[in-house]
Length: 190
Image (tube, rainbow, N blue to C red):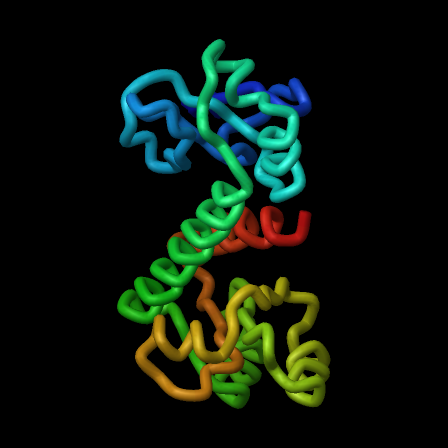
C-alpha cells in the first residue's frame, strides 16, 4: 500500500504543498525562529516554501510573529543560516556517496560512465572553466548537472584535490542525493 505524502501550508503563499517542498522552522523558548529540517525541536512546525525569496518575504512581512501570535526574532541572518545548513547537508551527502562507492570523479571517468549509461546525474564545480563545462555538456546526454559547490568545497568534502566533475552512479542513494541537491538548487536559485 502506497503511503500518502504529508502536506503542510506555506505561511507566505497559503499554498498547501508536500513537506519535501517546504522548509520547516520552529520557535525556541527564547522566541527565536530557527530552522528545524530534521524535526528535532518539539512543537508545531512553521512551514515556508523552499525558496530564498519566499523566506525573505516571510521575514519582511513579519509572518513568523503573526503565525506564532507573539513577537519573535527572525531576521535576514536566518536566510544565510538556512543557505549554509542546506549546503552543508548537500556536501555531507556527497561525502557519504563517495564512502558508499556510488561516486566517480574526473572528467574521463565521468564521460566513460555516461557512455555506459551508469550515471544518474552529474555534479560540476560552480567555478569550472568554460571549456570543461562545454565538454561535460556535450557528453552528458541530457543528464541533470548540478553546479552548487566550488572546487574548494568539493575538494574538502571528498578529501581530494581539483574536483571539478563528479558522476553519481544509478542507485537508490543517488535518488536521495538528487532530491536533496534539487532542494538546495531550488532554494539558491529563487
